Image (cartoon, rainbow, N blue to C red; front, side):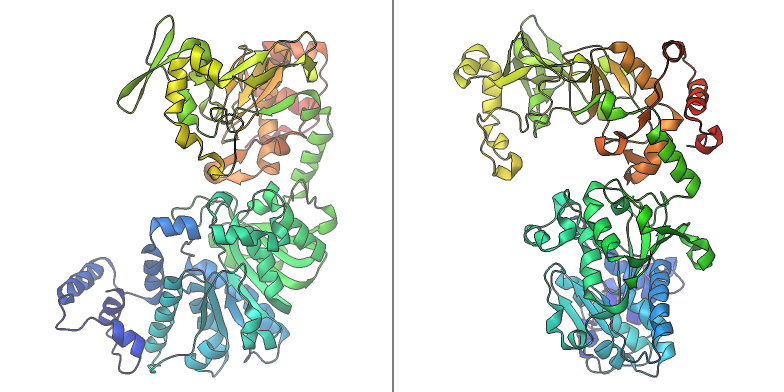
Length: 620
């Protein structure tokens, strides 16, 4: 349908190409009415039906399930054109002959980057498209339908240009980029790799990577830290596939510059001191349906002293000049803490904040909440209660659980203020017992570390039969935690032991946020999940800290040091906030902060103490 409609709309006749002829709907076919209707619909909304529309349409018809697993996404033409221009220009400048350039995309999807390359390359040579397809273009994708569509696209493109031949010789392969052996492709092997490699590496999170690829991650050094998203590996794969002085160009997620799982990529690039041009789009969204922070990376396989960085709007990239970029020496970049690529004023401000007073993690404990790995089973919201029981609905069935085995729990990821605590409070089934000890171990600030152990199963069954029966009904589902690969000491315990022993006053906050929400709770036994807390035995310390952490100064620090997420959200993980410097306030200062309710006055006060101009942080 797509091929036939394209031919009809563009009044193209195919006489020779076997592939395209096999896809044409015959005039006497039962599908001809549907084809005519489809063409009519297109005509109502579009004046023309170009090859770019075909690229977008091919990407659109990929199923949502495949997009999630394979990370397929349509790359806008202007992005492709810019990347191709930047990588090709360097090659053309450095090579007198361009007849034998080897151009590749190892996650090629439906072949959009090939069209961008051909549009410019063909103008510089006398080669036919048949010759270009045979000699110059190389592609790989894990999905066979993507390669099929690339072949269709390139065949139609050639027919539009007047090249209607029986068949083209394509170097387009189905395979996994993590282990595909390009040495077996003789043209690439003889060239010692690609001259130009471009692409939009797959947007697949660590938890969504297919089993085959997971087994191959360890083959690549960049995967050694954290849980790597799939796109991270494409930096190393691509650079190792380049010929000497070859050029790589990606449109990709920018989180690798700061994230924990990006340490391997940062180390790989920095150790090799590659010539690197980095265009940061910040929070501006490029891809429809994918709210991600993106950047363009142009990397040459040759030595340089640092990264050439700029921040740009996507529609401003063609206006960039060499003066738009500033050189950040590799010697100034921190692999473990993350690359700070902002301007010198921001960089010096961040350093000043970190050097002020004491680091946050040196004065308080930052702790993860409970991790049951099946919150939908353990956590519930009571609809009613008696003296002995809580009641809630599971699907359409009313469930009763003994009160004595339940504890209060809250979810910091949805908590914005102290006023919401009561309405958002939930209950959690807690099949553990506390061992009392007169010799309690202490964390910082005298926070008691209680010893918690699972109940004996018989004790659980006899004393809390309703809770036991309820969990037993979910025993099979509980066994699926950790993908069924872990044997728990007792089937009913939580998936992780973290967060069980945390006792004290709490400052609750989410894993990621678009604003600095820190909520104080004086309930020492309160549990929490999907979030963090700062614990202390000193409530005044937390109340003062709350106002500091809700300041523009702190959020300025987070936005420039942390990993960005979609919708202007940033990670508040310990590794990002632990080095925030907390000023050593005098007793008088602490009393003033404690009594002050105007956050703008607190912001000004903190800037004065940290010796940072308010103008630098005021627009955060």
